[in-house]
Length: 265
Image 1 (cartoon, rainbow, N blue to C red):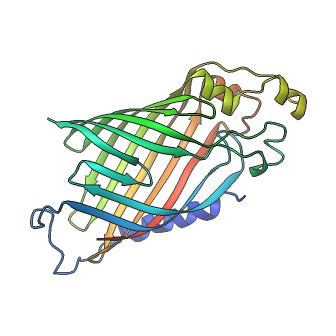
Image 2 (image 1 turned 90 degrees about the vertical axis):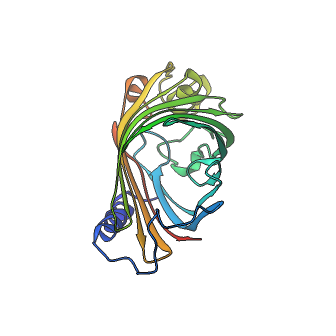
């Protein structure tokens, strides 16, 4: 376990590095000059820092592969988006269906903060995203359903603004509002009778409702002909029953910090 400062500073450093102006090699073509290949691939390595559980002031640093493979602008395999396909794409509207994997939560990730709560099992997650793009703006609604374990549903609505520059920089600012059903809220914020007995905490039964609002900064920068760097910072504020949970020690929290280096094929 670790505190968030180390990777946050590294992510900020990556962002500053990516913002440094640089001239792309002469052989790198603009998007208009590139042919339209069937496959688009970015592969690399990443590190991600996130809380052991929402609202808990203890963090896990996880090494991850960075994968972003797209076939004919429709089928994709992605560390972030999962395995799926764009089933509708017309007039700025699109709809994606995908399968992710939720690692759940282990009590021994934070032996003090999660003592007596038991584990939340890992499970595949079915996801659907509806999106509308107009210029640099994107509005989206996302839903994720755990297929097993806590069998819960999470949703999120987002508004994003993206900027692209001729130097290979893509910068995105995004605001979001997240909500969850009662099963998800009970799994991550609740304390049932057995957990209360084991942990000594008072019982708590949260209901469905708003979970968090927050903002994300995403950055991707091409460095040279093939290499690139990507960074994400996500900061959020817990709401409603999630905020009132006896498990919550941090209402305002770094939700995620991630940094990746990749090679574009």
